[in-house]
Image (cartoon, rainbow, N blue to C red):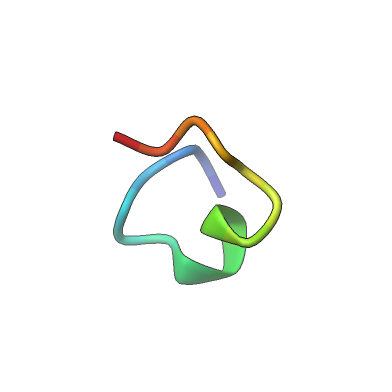
Length: 18
């Protein structure tokens, strides 16, 4: 997943979600 606020699974590792 990308750094999107929709991808909760990615947000956990991605801290650049806007």
